[in-house]
Length: 370
Image (tube, rainbow, N blue to C red; front, side, top):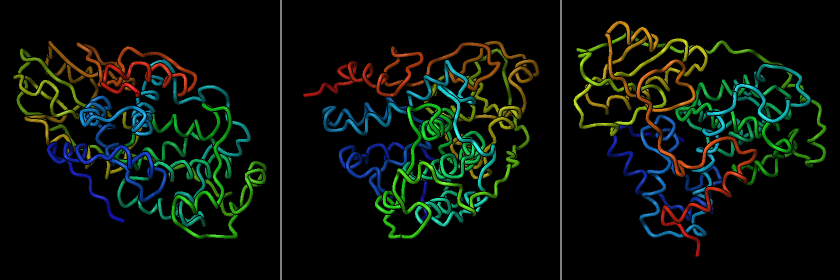
């Protein structure tokens, strides 16, 4: 299936308007379910979780009707809050157990795992830059808990290919599957995969009980692992006129909001730091998507280099940027991102604990349960 992700802001808003949160809650686990496809825009900072939720709430829904939808938005905020206070590049709660390698099975990279539901999703990933959340979990379970790869390198591979690549959500989800963020590892058998991917496959290495899968030996064709040399191809700087006396708004891979201080006379710069993309590489498809979204920002210039070299070269005086845990070395006036509940900060050991706090504040968003 070919997916289209519009990049003009008006079309993105129309995607928000078409959300059916009740249908989403009933069907979201199926690969053909009524999902929103908003994650690429939330990840790139074009829209925010609170903006999406407020728009849906304006249609008069109650919390009990759309709780599944609200929870998924809150999962994104939850992982971002963890990333603000913890190093999510490392195992968060406990070490991953039964680790046999620190690479990724070649069969996953080649989309030849032998599991039809997963291989179809992998082909779609390479074609569209998108993967259904359930098949992401299946892939992570296959890599971490069947092939016994440590979660980090496979997580970097998936992030590299996703238009909605968000390192906090991605790393947090992989750790949840691998059991470093959760009480137990996540495993899916063939019956489960068949149900949600609409396949009818039998006699695979996953076609067994969950008890058997917990102690399965690594299947032969998953033993061949590779370390990928992931690279980002960045353009040259394309700086337009910069007036150091004007305020400067810094955009980056996580902030491409076309409405941010939109009516103010200013310098607008898309900052692409090579060190950032060396640490968190993205594919050419993701680079192209970033630039297409950036075109919605009036008079934006591209600067490839460090934050400090940008400031020094153009003698910038008043600098604004949006908070993000990967903004290493930024200085100036930091503005908050869009949070569903901005008051709820810090580390919560489980999503349930976080959700318990958030749900008590839903009345502020006209989401009182009846």
